[in-house]
Length: 311
Image (tube, rainbow, N blue to C red; front, side, top):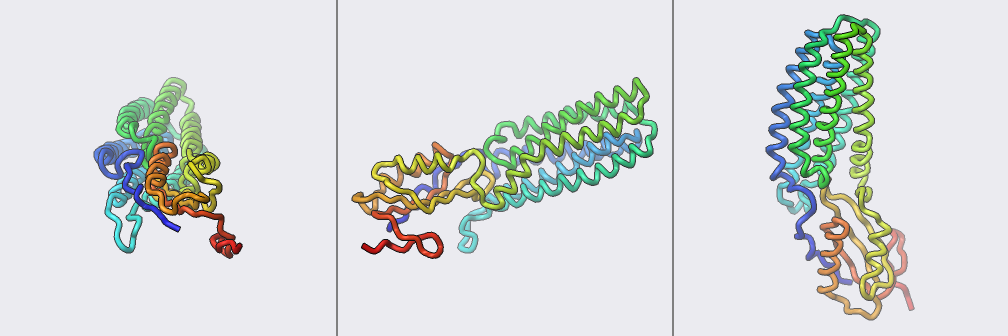
């Protein structure tokens, strides 16, 4: 029963693991670190829970950017005899750690916001508006840096969504600062902080769910297993498909293994395999496929496959 691995060198969808976005990660980290320092100092000076909560979230974004950048650099390293897939899987682990750090930061910010709600104090609304306005520019620019790759890599998409969310949150802080400035209602500041927490928590939930699924080697979102199975069954001469597995190698690379039953066909059909692997990559974004061809359906062994049927 022949196997074929010749399709593994096809170009993968999405941005390069460490090329175009290294500069985006670097500038995103530098700009956001400077902004976090300024926003935290301004939040303490202006006594603004909204600014402090936004600074805390921005700090978690800096850590997320650093982890994602480091993971993308490691993912670009060559495979070894021990790590035969290379280090691609670290991008999934980094995304999972980032999600955990985010919700840990949200819990801390929630605690601080409740304390400010119980003990309201005067807020410098003009300082809040100024710093949050600066946040709109910085976060908007950083999101723009990642916009072109956010559909190809969950790490890049995470960076893009975090920055875009932060920009929108900063808009909310500006509005809140203006309301406090003109109305003098001190309770508005922690209420706005609660809204920020809600927005960030809800917007990050989908990313958290996807990273958990990737860590469990679930079929990546956007790939329909039924469609893949039907696609394989429609190949010339294929009568059955079994032991079909699809899983993520990284946040942007997908692998597939399958057994195809082709009665009466050549045992080794390189043209068939090359066309199949090409089509799997271009139809479903599966760039690493291993296919076994069989001339009859094997019996099921204790592990699912593959005791040959006895005539």
